[in-house]
Length: 466
Image 1 (spheres, rainbow, N blue to C red):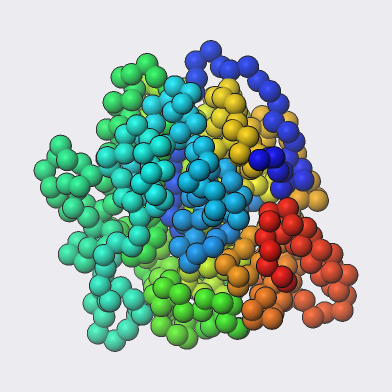
Image 2 (spheres, rainbow, N blue to C red; image 1 turned 60 degrees about the vertical axis):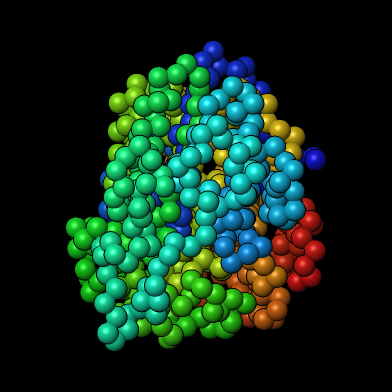
């Protein structure tokens, strides 16, 4: 397959000789973490000291996106693209027959280990990792009906109640050499990752340690000390809060959307956002423990640490709770890369896709990038040899319900089935609250963006008529 480039400003990766000692990779992926869910990336209400320190010693991408989904389980599509390097429509069909990220590093001599969430096929798991014992294959954690339609009269569900299951898991399936206890999933993944780091550090081989957190995905649970840091009545209601979305965008009652009652009230949004922040801060705490374990292993100097998320989340913005939409809170995600040769506190504003991690690690390790990989390496951005361009654009889609194209300053969203269009001037309206699609002065821009959207569809083999 011919490799395609979807970011106009991304330079072709320079060819570099393989490093004398191949670097290690510690990959950390959150579930449902929006782009400003980190304090150092604009999340002023949430405390994330460990991710902030990772940003301070590495490179953060302020405009990183996922490319969309063919299913309400957006994480499946995002992780398929991440692990195959294929763009969305091809990943849906060709994932099982394509060289995968872990498989490629494994074939190049890496020890590959996964801890935590996978949410792809068992066959792909076995192709990708030498060690995959402590893995959560995916799907929903068991949680009762009390976790939905909150707040409600008489509902006593609390995030720190370990009897409610959800993120509170038995450790035995994942840590077979330890006594069985009930712990939060994030602690289980961090404990196991720290143990794997010690084991990997004792071997001469380079390694990929892939840690898939199930946080801050709902049920949004955390120990009480973390929940108490975010009293719901003190949480700011977002500027783009709405009681309900203005129209049915295609999946108005998908599972995520019934976490809070309709219409959304400010109090409900405050409750859910307070629990989201607590969950994020607890995730950050566990990330810090893994970073400390890496330092203790003696391998930190030759290890690239990559932190990202599969997609974002609305949590009460635009009348929505989930991620099955085209707004920035759901399509835009954090991406942080720190490691050898990367300047401290570097910020890249180029528009990129998270799914470029596969190609990036190959280039950093001096490994040939498989010809099937379509998302380009971000190594030129890490080396400051590539620059952002005013002509950049990213495409995103959700099933047959939504298509969008985003440039630096504008976003067009098309809803083919609802027969609606939205256009946002992001420089004036970053919260995407003022749809200007019907304003005559934006007619030429709307036509231009429609043409750009159709070009993306053609490049990506998207046959949906808009």
